[in-house]
Amino acid sequence: MDDELAVTGALNPFSPGAGRPPKELVGRTQELDAMRTIILRTAAGYTNRGLIFSGLRGVGKTVLLHRMMQMAKQAGLMTFRLEPSGSYDHDVAALTKDMERSIRRYRRAHFQQRAKDVVERVQSLNIQTPLAGAEITLHAPTPTDSALELEIAVEDLSEILAEEHSGLFLFLDEFQEMDTRLMGTLIGLQHRLGQDMLPFYIIGTGLPNLPGVLTASRSYAERLFEYHEIGGLSDATVARCLQETVEQSGQRFTEEALNRLVLDAQGYPYYLQAYGEAAFNETTSNPIPLDAVLAGEPQALRILDNGLYDSRWQRSTQLGRQYMHAMASLNTDTCDTAAIADALHRKAHDLTSVRKNLIELGLIYAPERGKVAFTIPGMADYIQRTNPADTLPYDAKNGVSH
Ligand SMILES: Nc1ncnc2c1ncn2[C@@H]1O[C@H](COP(=O)(O)OP(=O)(O)OP(=O)(O)O)[C@@H](O)[C@H]1O
Ligand SMILES: [Mg+2]
Image (cartoon, rainbow, N blue to C red; front, side, top):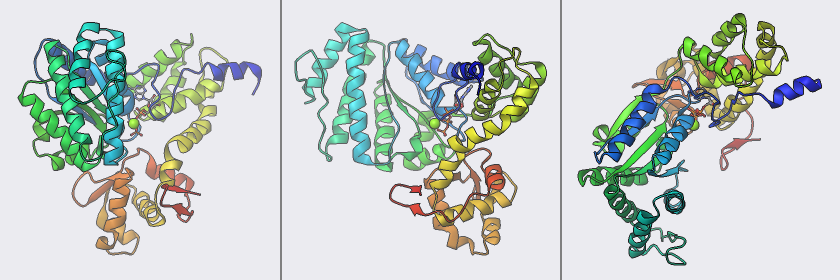
């Protein structure tokens, strides 16, 4: 790479990668409006439903969640967050810790007087401060009472925040990963506090199976949340995003370059960022020509394989990989489980546990009974294009292959 291209690369405005905020977040007006509505209603003292956003991998759930959390913070609401690990004890401790952090920051940022009240109330619930009025430590609770402590703290904070026409917002990414007991506790808590007109809301994101997982946990979850599916972007939105992103670096794409990138992106935000980044790296010309897009395509595929596909593939067991190979060979978005079994010369019920395991790993989901689909757009193409090995050694403990 010559010096000029190296500088171009360093100033690349695209951001392919899990959870990497894009320079231009596009096509999510409706979702952001839903959050804006909750913020306004909370400030007006009205109650709300929580929000759930579900979608395939790489469509932009995490960056949307972060954006919403920023909005809530900027509006002076109290926020805390978690990406569940699946372990009850770990996640309760992590939630408690993040709540502690939020209380501190809330106090520092604004609302000094109100935060003083919070301190006193939290103290009265056995959540001690090392130095009264200075710093709060929500003591690491014992496993048995930890969730109860957390519930009490949430209720207490919600009461105080309600008086201020503020609210407590819990942001949960990959919500479907949460231990079922903790999920039930948190949903139940939002339900109960809602009945008391207390402003505690969950804003959660997850894979397409998330709404079903929540309803299985608590049947009233259906009424407790407003559900949004996060899908791909229209071609016009992709084009606008590409153009506005490079404009931030004082550049433009030619029309031919833009048309090709729109084809490459297929409406999928992760692809948009990967192909945009690769094209940008290929040239110092302005406007960026079609040649740069074409020259960048192999690089974009490498970004996608490294960032999106390889690691997911490696998470699976040998049988899981054979199952995914069979899915890819069927050449349909949604695969019949019986057809997969046929392709593997197995009986469908012999494959129940491997299917369950792939669902638990978040690699596939069941859009309807008897069907499965990849959670990662383009996974079938990746499998057919690279023919990744089924037989790499698998480290079940760490979920990785060597
Ligand atoms: N609305 C958007 N506009 C432009 N780029 C976006 C948008 N949403 C996401 N992206 C880009 O797409 C990529 C994937 O985003 P993100 O990690 O939020 O997806 P995700 O749905 O959380 O994926 P996963 O299910 O794997 O966690 C990132 O590179 C991000 O910058
Ligand atoms: Mg994510």
